[in-house]
Image (tube, rainbow, N blue to C red; front, side, top):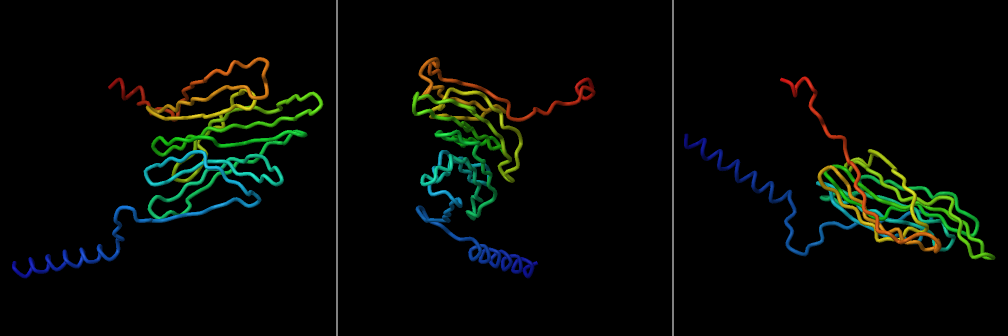
Length: 219
């Protein structure tokens, strides 16, 4: 019996030494990891929002090239919280650009609910007539998308909704109780004739609730 106790004690001591050598001990303020990233052909990256799931750090923003006017392209990137290694990425393509105008397909804000990433964006394309100083929009929508936080796979969306010209932020979203709430400004920037500048608050269902079969409910 005494020999067994000694063997157990030795095993515990060896296990403790192994853990001490295999797990890095950090003190307050230590840098654990760092990452840098860019997008080919773009000279500017704007981070618009950041959120965390149970094991991922997720950022969204817009990338563009100011020298050649590529249009604003939205992106989402996810990193492993422990190692900092990139896990997945989603990028948007720009809509067709109008003559003398601009195009945007952006991600502006995001939130996380469980294993679902919910991201709000804005997509627009317009032409500009310098002679009349008029902007004509061929595309003008706010968008809402859902992705899997672990894999980046698309879950649903985009849900498109017509917006005021040059829909200006800030736009915020928050999720609770299987719903995502979107709050945005409908401020008219180029259309000075008819838009009131309302604040829009909307709620969307995130996932389909699991309902027990009727036969089980009746038992």
